[in-house]
Image 1 (cartoon, rainbow, N blue to C red):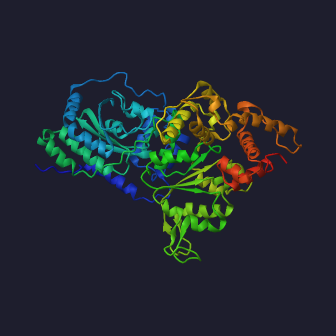
Image 2: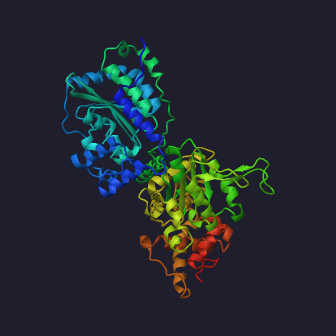
Length: 588
């Protein structure tokens, strides 16, 4: 029989609204602005063009009728989402049985499309779920458990809970949800009513691909039509498969790195935050000491974020020569200057188009480059050297720095307007000495280095080595830890690594730091004050002593010292000047 994939009028109204929203001028992301306004003022913005009327009304119910806490997830971490009492009824269980019969075709289809189907009772409690869980946080995982409540009064507006509230099909997308944990998703709900218009159950779809409203409604309409009727299609699996092929839901690439179980909960939380920010193209500023793994964090974001299949282009802002700034960033046309390639050259912005642009060591960028970069970020357009037409680019900007940018702004070394352009949201990575997951980090690095060795070996760290590593202040952070473990693995005498196997320079580092502190106390009155021992030392104290120790070890050789520290010579010279040191690491 012929099955018409049409959507009845009520759904068409909602579908049309979403299609209209996507054609709006996104000079300002108004749902984002509206949600932030609501969470700051506990009031819904009056501007009618910020959010749809359906969203306005649902937020009003959440605040005024349901009296929910504000939508930031921090307010909800321990919020109960399990229904204490569940209404058991025959009708909803009959629907669940029918969905189970249909699941042989639907489950594969849902998993390939990255969509999850849920069936809830009339009270919003979860009765049945089909497809793969796409949730990326412990809070959302709780909504996938039996009897979890999708009720609007419990988790705020969502397609499933609001469809039950309104007894009408409804959908919400991204930051139209009241609760921030739902922002990465689109939720669509369809209520099932009996002959007396009483709510029996709600069938809903959840997807982390926010461009598929029309397809989700088409699929949901198909399912609900079969549930509401005795069509032969409901009993014919071959016919189901033919109809499913007509629905424009494309398969998605599985992104298994979205949350890595080998990462610590703290790092996973930061990664989850960064992925959400990238969904909405909000610039990210990553801060932390040198060597804490800012570049590694960006790689994790690349793997887990929505642009995982697009390029990641990194720029070391401190190392770009002044006369090559524009050609390096924006490229050049053929014959634009002497020595130019015959076919021209694309710049970093164009290479990163549709992907991520990583601006490393942004705090050491020259003022000339800052002005050039700001113009490109504000217009999202670049003009190659020698070209006449601007080129539109779509890049998500992630910047990283180990300097205090606000201090640099106040000192006139960094443009204030560029700082606020880059600092859409800030993620701070703790230094290794303050990390609570040192053992996990040690184990990960150890396994990674072992996998690179030419022969398969089993190596373990003795307890005294683990305790020494946990006690060490690590001025070079994770970069230094990697170097120490790598050198130890290749020179260890046996399968159990002891203190004697560790590099001698590493073992003597504590002594060197203590000697350096004594020298600083005895130096001239212009010397920097010696820091206190232990964890009370500030970030600047550790950075200064790391540089002084390295300069001392390298006997004033700037090139070797910069290489050991993992920074450029230019950056090292700036730090030497900032700390008032000479090339031998002595205060002057």
